[in-house]
Structure formats: C-alpha cells, structure tokens
Image 1 (cartoon, rainbow, N blue to C red):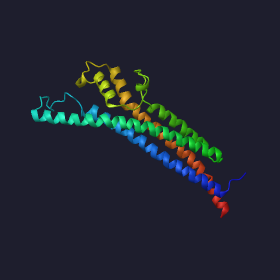
Image 2 (image 1 turned 90 degrees about the vertical axis):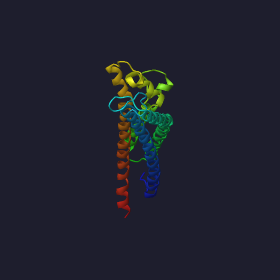
Image 3 (image 1 turned 180 degrees about the vertical axis):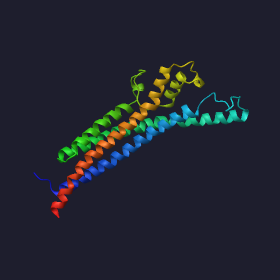
Image 4 (image 1 turned 90 degrees about the horizontal axis):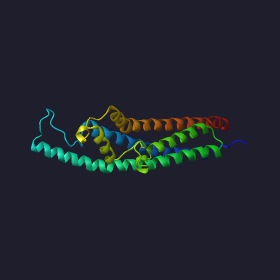
Length: 221
C-alpha cells in the first residue's frame, strides 16, 4: 500500500520533533562530559586544589600568597563539590531520555514503514552503550574495578591520594598511574566517541528517510 504525501508529512513532523529532542539531550550529555574533563585537567594539571603547592622556585609561599592559595582552594573545592555531581546527574538523565527518543525514532520508522530503520536502530544501541558508560557503577556496586565515566570530587580526591604526592601518595606505581588516567581521562573521552557514533548512525538513518520524500514530491508535481 502506497504512503500518501500527507502521511509522509506527518511522519516527517514527528521525526523532526524526535530529532530536536535528541539533539538537546545529546548536547547536555556532551557539555556534562566536557565539564568533567575540564575539571580533571584543572585539578590534575593545574593543581587548583593542590594542598601543598609552593612558589615556582620551590620556596615557601609568603603569608599573602598562602592566604590567596587557601582562598583559591576553598573556592575550587566548593565549586567542584556541586558542579561534578550536577553534571553526573544531568548526563545520566539526558542519556536515558536520549535512548527513549531514539527508541521512538525506531518505532516511528517501523510503524510508518519508512527507510532508515537500520540507522535508527544502530543509533539506539549505541545510546544504550553510552548509558551504561555513564551509570555510576562505583556507587551502585562499591567495587573498585566497576566505574562509570563520570565522577564527583570525593572520588577524584581519593584517586589523587593514590597517585599524586601532594595528596599523600607515596611512590605510586606505573600501573596505578595508568589506571588513574584511564579512569579519569580516557574513559570520559571514550564516552565522547560513543556519543559521536550515536549522532552519525542517527544521521545515516535520517538521510535514508529523507530520500523517501524526494520521489514522492516529484510525482505529485
């Protein structure tokens, strides 16, 4: 049974709504992950909460320098204490909603018998992978090797205490350092690549769907 132009227009409007919502949730996840990566770089590379930072020449800081450093550390601690959990929450909720939007795209494609089902389905499956990566397994399972891609300040400080002398680490091993960077740097970056896969697969499905509209328009002219 042929699909009329009016029916195709209705499916197109529905997919446009799904696409808009999907893009919103995708952006929220991306921003959350980037903020977390930025926080890690600030703490690990720039020592914004480093409790034992000295002057560039290695000398003890003056009273004014120490006071300024203490104030800066306090500000960063307070800021990261709520920013990191907030981004974890936003990313996780957005990931759930993203998967729901992609599942809706799959259902629309099936019900409307539209092209592009393979792209939508692949995008949905990648979104499930992304959701699994963003779940805070370290809090749910309390198992050292089980971890999500995102973190809060307490978890970052605990890890720093294992690898950074300024936080109390004593002769950290290379394995410990490797696991530290895998957990707080590589893992979130990997989540960004999974996000990219979600977007690319959806775009492929949408492109196939839009190709269905062109011939219909030409026939009706």
